Image (cartoon, rainbow over all chains, first blue to last red; front, side, top):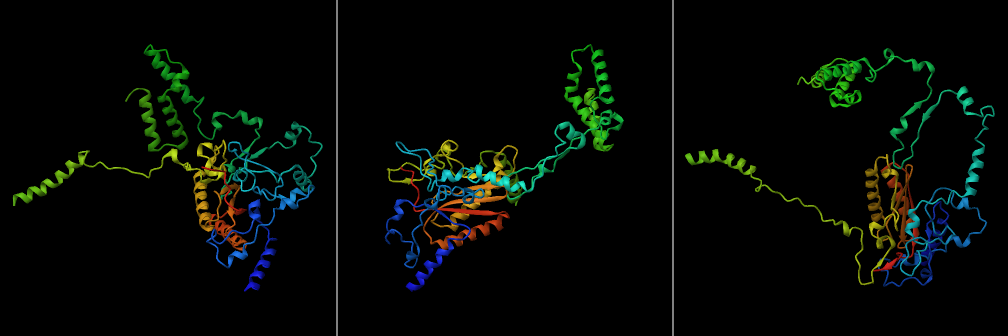
Length: 265
Length: 167
């Protein structure tokens, strides 16, 4: 029985070289003898000898000139047994000091950049150099770039936290190149009907101004007329008529808006 | 003979008439009592109650003396799915509470980076190491399959709960 327990203890040792190790913090209290059976009622007689004392933290074995990027190669939470700095964090009690790093939840909460020291960044750049080529020397100004590569396509990638890697906003792609002849686009070339600066807008404004003049009511100006609710509704109905075509819905909308505009309801 | 007839005739009238009376049909709506001024606060005792830093500080100390236990982009302007992240957080906390019974020394810290979730837990040394390793692998595999994203569990063992003060 004792031999089996001893063997189990020895087997535990090589497990420490698995990819993950727990960060343990040892305070002077743990170096004292194991708690008496009266305090730990949960442990069974067989488990007690298996629970060995926590090992001293790794910081005690670290050399001053060690390779830090190998301790923190990627973004990882703060491990107090692997960071040899005497960091303290927390609001102190009266006549006290901030709490130590062992078991400090505040240090765990904040994002740390221990994996991005200047040495580590330099290493990353060195590794990436193999995949980069030199910028062509002939393209040294923005105008030259625009002349030789006129078409600019803008895509945006979004980083957010969540199980899904998709973001619908990333589907928007902008093409940024307008030719000179595109500015000569006339009303007849438009793909969809635009009400602004159209003959419909001019007609309705003239009609309304004539009505107001006949009623001797010249206070309203063009902008105010355009901003009224009835003109807005008329605009919407005309746009939907022209773009969607004639159907019951659009025609009835047009009828209502005209009646309201000319105060015939 | 006439009486039952008029009763049958009267009954529906009586019912509809009483429904129009507001006082007859008043109902009482109750919800669980949850006073804002008692949330997440450990009540002061005789000076023998040990509290951790997390328990000692009330919610109005968040962003002043306390950080956030869960970090994700859902609450930023223009970002979606904050509610889904919160529900996931609640599940993670309940799961870990049940998987490591009596071992958690403090609240979990959940961090999300792109699509992975990092659970940072402070554990007491209640179980032997091989049992901890098994539970870590079990939790990570189960949670990753459940949420279809990488879940990493980082444990930090402490000998006992870290006491901030006694209240």
